[in-house]
Length: 270
Image (cartoon, rainbow, N blue to C red):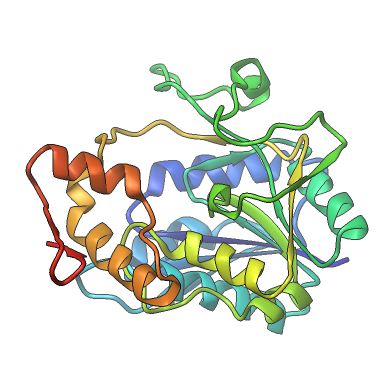
């Protein structure tokens, strides 16, 4: 199978450099690596000197980042170049040396499934940065998601656990899902929608042991108040499409802080 990695990025040069270095250490390097630069020529410059990586500049001036559209652009470019397996990896994520091989093995036995690997959130790097040779020492996958033993694949039923930080699927399965819904812009919701579409179309969910990714540290808010408007807008899109509210923990946290209220008469968050 011809393997392509798809990454979207904007103004994350330091994290992107580490991301590219980690992939270069893979036991199996990708046949193609498409990096979609969202309105950021600097991202194009970072990628330009990396073997087997190619940038695509997606025009964008301001406002919420078109993450769904960017992922679609990257996937379409990879498929057009002959990719059989698409591996989506967030720009903040560092690939374990075995990540590509684990996803590839899982895709051969589960070619019609949505494949997800465990993700570890790393602590802040020291003055010399992360030691890419020693990431496994920091392995501590997010406890809310399955973490099967390396080399095994576990079936999943809760599609709300899917996240777009690290996942893989065959080009045929990508076509069946139809890509990400571009009604979503900015932060939140588009990956939950993607998984729900997969479930509706009878595509299985599989958790791939050993397909580890390590998420580089950066400051975050909890709840992510800096993304409040995006989250409300995207939650409303999701509710319109699926009849329920996603990201309910964040919505309730925003409400507890007095930032939003639920309008019972119109059945919407404001």
